[in-house]
Image 1 (cartoon, rainbow, N blue to C red):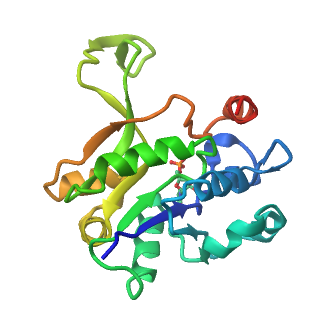
Image 2: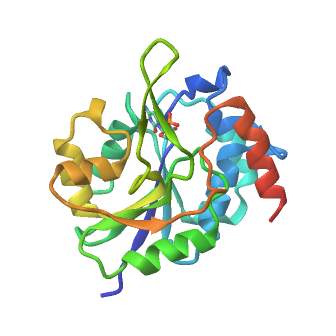
Length: 232
Ligand code: C5P
């Protein structure tokens, strides 16, 4: 049987570091909400059969992006089962798909707040992992020198960057494995799917990502995302 590849987008966060009333996934970016860019970017990857969006049950903004979605709505499933943490939103989304997905199907979890993901990055991730038993993530080797702070604004130590990578998304795992790992994980220690998989005793693979696949977190990131999208 051919393998299925599903994108799951947790989009139930409030984006408090952005300092805006509007959750960051709905902030305007080049004339449409940020989330509409992210969905279009994923829809451009031909390998993805389906896009599943996990919203907060209280989300009052999704309808505003519908006019920007066009044909991709045919691939889109919207779930209103987001939770108090990213891990809970992903866990709830995976549980809602239980009757439709097989254990071996691939789930690519992607931050709603990464609108600059390129179809070529998704293709590289899938090509690298499709025959793997577990899965892996897009990531980048750390380029800067790293300092550990002492809590008082001074440097306590320089940390070796050898072997350190920055995790990005998509993070691509087998459905059954990811569900089990997240069901057993404690939310306060889990900031991405790979850490739940690691905690369950597996070693996800690292696949070279792209500097442009930024997560919009602080106000300045929006301008950078606009530059990257315009440069396409
Ligand atoms: O806050 P952060 O940037 O780490 O969020 C990463 C992704 O997880 C975002 O797409 C955000 O909407 C999502 N998230 C979620 N449910 C939460 C918190 C974050 O779906 N409770």
